[in-house]
Image 1 (cartoon, rainbow over the protein chains, first blue to last red):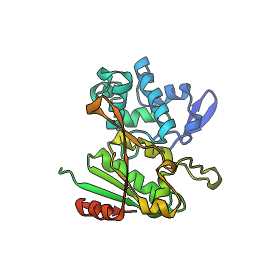
Image 2 (image 1 turned 180 degrees about the vertical axis):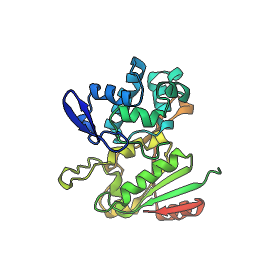
Image 3 (image 1 turned 45 degrees about the horizontal axis):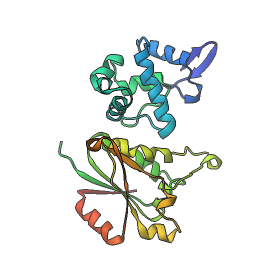
Image 4 (image 1 turned 30 degrees about the horizontal axis):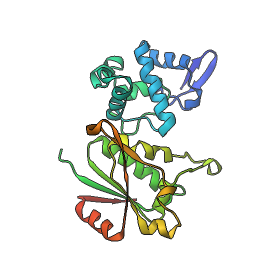
Length: 110
Length: 134
């Protein structure tokens, strides 16, 4: 499978995750979000940027429990709960947000 | 689900076989399911925690930064065998500085690595419900 972004073909796996995370751009994120029926807002970008930074530092996508806790610490307690994250990413924050962020599917993701 | 005490024993060099990476992935999954996880590094396994790993020449992913995330997963009992370090001319300073944040103490950073001798390792194996060797 592939995703066409501004005339450039980005390869994805059968579930739509980007194969090469270095090819990710913000335009790609918007397209990936569309395929998940997610409309990107500032709140969505906060989580996506956080995931990119986390991956850059630790080379893994965090499990949802870890993500929730870290978001709470970084962006404020009112955002560090699964209700908030599920409102943004209804089909699972780790899975859906990681896909939009261009990261591999999280290890042991639910 | 009852919480089991799991001890993961890591005894092999980080690259060349898949044991180290597989162990790390299982640990992260196990921790996500709220098991009580303890890690032990001995023999060549102590190299898994070494600072400054560079895998460009062997075309492997350098997964050593992931050990730094263990604290986020509440994996904060990381034991390292003194004798194995000595035999390889290593000391605690040659290992990555792994920490965890204690939520009960306003996210104070605490060290995760504990250096142990062989007698303490025997005790560790005794007190855990399951010992998984990688």
